[in-house]
Image (cartoon, rainbow over all chains, first blue to last red; front, side, top):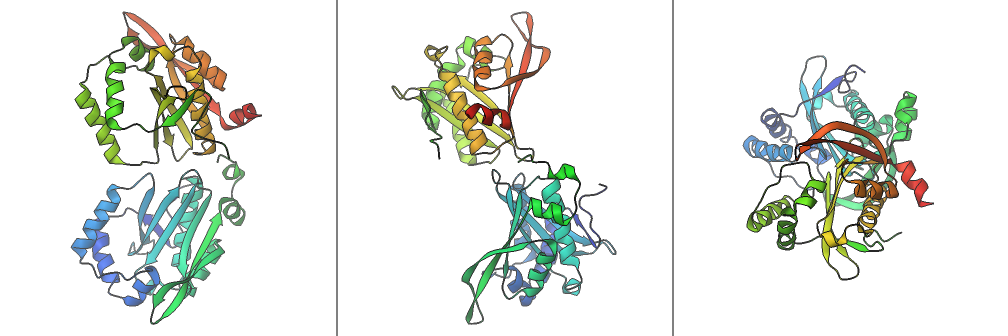
Amino acid sequence: MNDVFTGKLVRLSAFDPEEMSKAFTRWNLNSEYVRLLSSSAQPMQSAKSAAKWMEKEIEEMSPANYFFSIRTLAEDKLIGGLGLDVVNWPGRDAFVGLGIGETDYWSKGYGTDVMNVLLRFAFTEINLRRVTLTVFEYNPRAVRSYEKAGFRHEGHLRNYLNREGRRWNELYMGILREEWIELNNHAPSAAEDGG
Amino acid sequence: MRDLFHGELVRITAEEPEARAKSEVRWQRDTEFHRLADGDAAQITSEKKIKEWFEKQAEQGFKPERYPFSVRTLDEDKYIGFFGLWVDLIHSVAWVGIGIGERDFWGKGYGTDMMKLCLQYAFTELCVQRVSLGLHEYNPRALRSYEKCGFRLEGRTRKDIRREGRRTDTLWMGILREEWEALQK
């Protein structure tokens, strides 16, 4: 294992509030992006306000929260952000949230690559048993990407979202460690039960 | 599911900073207790300062890597001691620190009852894979109690502690999840 944070198209890198807040503010000017990522109405934030919020989140980080920047391997370009929130340590389950703010990088496999890197980190480094995510029914691109990464549909909250004058479902997807191991033909040592 | 918070002799509680300070101030001054429980040099802290320290802890709120508990007797509801679990979340391992500040309750099975509740919590609620602890070689009463609970001696740090001009070893013990489960049958 040379670098658990490097994939085929992207690498995860340190989350720097100053850099991220600027990119964040720019990405959030795109309402399509905002509506794919956030379930409730997000206010438009100045970079300064976003930076302050990010700094506070980072302070409260680890051992439960992990934040990463997503950069392309080809040009080292910052294209998005990723968060992993371990909500249940005894159950060893975490919520993952990711967003690719640079729309040029949509539908090209970047999201799936990010998720693959994230799952490897989650299952082989933090030793989780499952990873959970939510995704909106009107985001089929993301749903397909997560399915490719191994996530299965587990349920949905009906009529959870309210946008454009109608209701939409929020979908719950999850992947178990055993499923990920099988999918990735991982070495037996990773399958040893240690919780 | 089992009752996690009641044993045969004791129950687990959370005590208020004021109550903890009231007892801790006495326990701190009991040199025999201090030398059995800790490795640091004896010190004297005011009840006020101790209370502030517990209040600061309370303000920090919940952290998943730390589970502190207070212990009261079932009999007379007397606050006699404590135990705390420090969890290594990544590796699913817990370290336990345990003590009975009220010396009248030494050597009567209270510690063993406390440790059993502690292990039950660690394995069935925190779901760790092993529990570790350290103790002084000059604390055979604790060693016997921990052995009764299923801990095995795993190692020792030689001549680790210096007191009264003598050097003594620190013993390390551990119990694995499978071992604890086997004991429950």
